Length: 154
Image 1: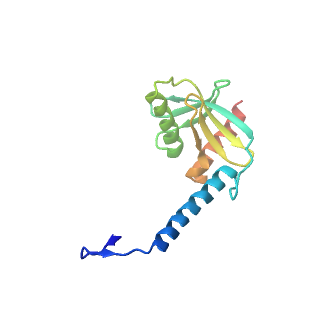
Image 2: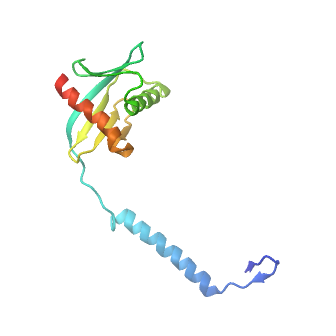
């Protein structure tokens, strides 16, 4: 029995309680079947890497950031202070995560273009991945530019 605001009991029909319980049980069963049986879910085939660039990041005393091809040390891009805010912030967040975990700054970051057209940035030291399109196509384009510049640098 439920209570109303005046303090008296309100009778709740057993049929209503039974039906509510059945609805909850049905919902849980439907979710479990979908989750574990794959019914009603969409799965994309795994993407294949079509272009990979391993980058080392070097903070310069004048505030610029040098991005180098980790394979041969060639300069891919020079990011000036106040430019490419998303690129700088993303790399800084990943570098700080390394430092918090007590890892070295020297392993490269891996920038990958996938065959489905997406871009990701991986920290090979921590295993973290950022899917760059999640932050908008304009922000992902800043990293896509690095792949093109890295192609010319290697």
